[in-house]
Length: 166
Ligand SMILES: Cc1cc2nc3c(=O)[nH]c(=O)nc-3n(C[C@H](O)[C@H](O)[C@H](O)COP(=O)(O)O)c2cc1C
Image 1 (cartoon, rainbow, N blue to C red):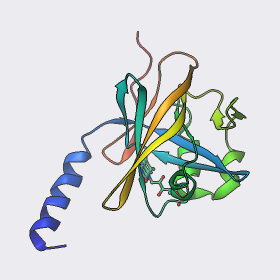
Image 2 (image 1 turned 120 degrees about the vertical axis):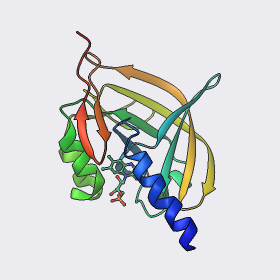
Image 3 (image 1 turned 60 degrees about the vertical axis):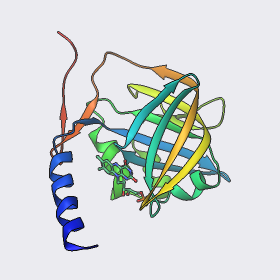
């Protein structure tokens, strides 16, 4: 990377520290193995078809099943589920990540977190490789919500909460 590009990357990182994001755990199941990864690079794409995108580093273990076309579930964490994010971002590996939290299996065979704020079961529709990451677009086939709105938020390199509406 050139010095100028490096300067921009440093400035971009500083700017992104001010972009508050809800924390999700992306899950998948492929060849009878379960995968889970904490993430914030998630966005809605379109309501017709109902679709969401995720950006996954090509080094992440979940990248392998997603590249093979496996479906995925996006679980928005509750403010009390910071420990699940820690486990799913490197504290544990593989199947051990499912020891923390109330995990169930959807009709389509995807692992989902029963008391997540919301879980979106997605069919893996498209992959766009860009730089270090792959953008996976999922068509939402099922969506469930649980409890009052009170998501776990990541901003300025730390977890915080907005709390439920008064
Ligand atoms: C709050 C938070 C948000 C993250 N967001 C993303 C993301 O959007 N995409 C990504 O590829 N990794 C993201 N990561 C990093 C992965 O969770 C982490 O590198 C994980 O360990 C990769 O999976 P692996 O250990 O199975 O290879 C995030 C980590 C944290 C703590």
